[in-house]
Image 1: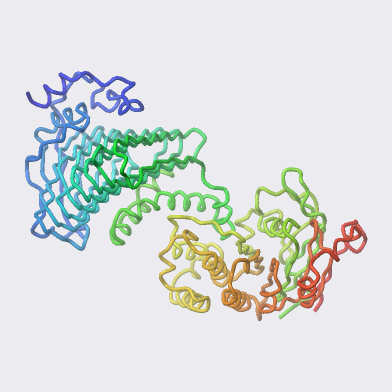
Image 2: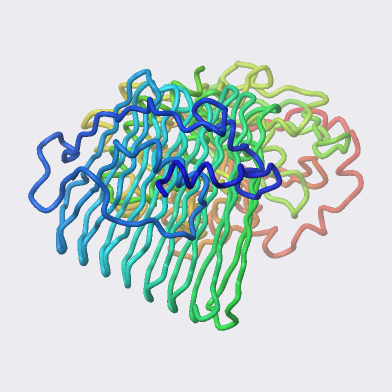
Length: 369
Length: 268
């Protein structure tokens, strides 16, 4: 049975389903008809370069086709749907073992004004050390992006995705296994699409894995940005932190649902999640639902929290007392709020590139809309 | 350096918060080049006065006036007061995680002293010299504003801003609180560098005489229950240290006597 048949066999998720409660499946389906598997989803243009535009060195590249099966602990609806519509748009990011790069690598995904989809399988070898930015740009009314695969044992990876499309719908699935003793940071910067639904799952089946998941999200107008992040601790001595910052302006809505699962046997697991929402207008809405499922008693700690609020008046007064015009002060505080997770995503070089990109592009233009 | 024109004039200032009066007729005049100090118990209105001069939106001014070089400060927004030359060193400076110190300083200097003052070798040299004087390392510039700073680092950072922003009037709200002896010396040195020998002035709010030994104010005012009840020279700080405030707890001090209604004159 292929993925399209599997998808059509599965009942459409009910509105009460946790994953689809805030953004129903039909609202992020490319046609809105959930019984349909469109055949006209096109492949975006991909380019893989160093951050300065020079070619990537040997040891990293994109190959056609995907070799890695997807863990069945991921949501079957979106995974099978995306596999079906991207059957001709499947690639593997192959990284040889021991690959290192001091300069960040950039994978640019360029869409045109047609519905587009991509399945990118990560096949990252052992003991690599590098940073990669995945930059999604373009004008596709719908873009479906499935990332599956694994990060090899002992690899140190900073993996940042920048959602920078002009508008439209972004459906994104991460289904990634973290190797033994791997140290992975996964950053998400989302500030472009009108509607985003992400289901990001990171599975720690091997001991010693160290994972940080960071979000820096800006919404405005009538955007709806919905991220579900699930971290599964199945092996002992695994560590994870989720730190998610969303700033909501206009009549936009952001949703952050987190699930930390610590399975029986994951002794010494250390897991925490924190959602912070900055509300920039009376009509903006932010929902954060952090959840824990802990089945192992011998853990270092498992915690969760959420905080919502407007721009802090005391901080505004402080900046205005330093000559900042109220608009500049507000913008500086929003940028600082988003930067406080952004700066954790990787090296100084990567951070510098991200802040420049966002200051000159996304954040400025979105706040001015 | 001094002239006959007042830098700061606070006249019969009445103010409060949520219908609760806090300041009950404050009068102060500071001339260019002068450093004044205000002492008083907790809750006497010292920080309220500092916040009102800076334009904190939570406070209501019910009577009186505040002017800087003849400009009515009460008509201005906080950012306009800052650009007009008022600087407040906060008792509890706000942390702004995510806002880098270097960027913050550059933007502040550009806003207050103009874009040209915030770039080029002159700005870098001024920054380097001020940091050196305050014993602040270069790595400080990469940190986030007051985020994770120790008490001493926060106070030094406030003085660094004072030195770079070159205000006409610096109000230092308990900048010495929580500092060790070396810290007080360093901060006092920064204040002297920024104010002494210039046309600027300063109002130091403090509980202790120690910082005043290093700064040597021209006048000391004692604030009790929202009123200035006594004004004197530097020796007043030592007297307060010895005798406390009880000897000034005389109801006559709070009556609307002609003496209290009139402006406390600070003369050269």
